Length: 260
Image 1 (tube, rainbow, N blue to C red):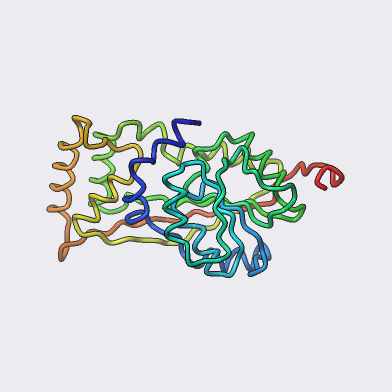
Image 2 (image 1 turned 135 degrees about the vertical axis):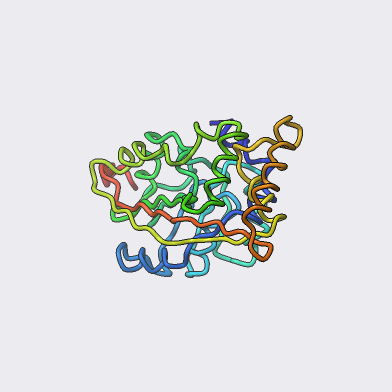
C-alpha cells in the first residue's frame, strides 16, 4: 500500500496538468440512473489532484476528497480552493475516516486498481447510506490509431512495471467488489490533444515510466520524439480514450443499528 501511495509524489505537477479529466455526461447518467442531485454527498476516494471531484463540485455537491498522498492532496486543495463544498481528507480507501452511513456516492476515478479490494468494499459499504451508490471510473487509453499503437509499444519497451499495474488488470476485482449485486457499465468518448511539450508531460505523469535519474529516461524521450515527429499533424497528436463507468449498490449492508 505504501508504495502505491508514494509512487505519484514526484509526478504531481505533470499529473494535474496533463492527465485527462472526465466527461460531464457522467453527471447526467448518475442523475438519471442513480438519483444524483446537487444535495448528494460524495466521497471521492483516491481523489488525487481532484479531477473527478471537480465535476461533482460543478454540480453543486459536497465532496470529500479522500487522498493518502500529501503532495496530491495539497495540489487538489490549491486547484479546488474556489469551491466551498470541497473538503480535503487524509485517508485511504481502506480507512476513509468518514462516519458510518454518511455518504450518497462513493467514487474512485483512476484509482480503484491501487486499492485492497476486500477492505475497500467493506469501508465503502460502511460509509454509504443504505441506498447509496459505488462508482468506479477509468479513462482507458485506446490503441486504435497508428500513433497510439506506437505509443503503447514505447510503454512496453520502457515502462518500469507497466504490465503489472495496468488498470485493465482489475476486471476480476471489480466484479468481486460489486458482487453479489449486479452492477452496470457505461462508456463515454474522451480525448486530449498535445503538442510535444504536452505529450512529454503526459508520459512523465504515469507512475510506470522511468524518471530522469533512470538510465531508460533519455532513450524513452528520444523514442517519444520520433513517434511525435512521425505522427504529428499541425504540431499536435491526439490521445483518444473510452471513459468506463462502473456503478452499483453494494450488498451486505451492516445492520441498521450498527450504523448509528
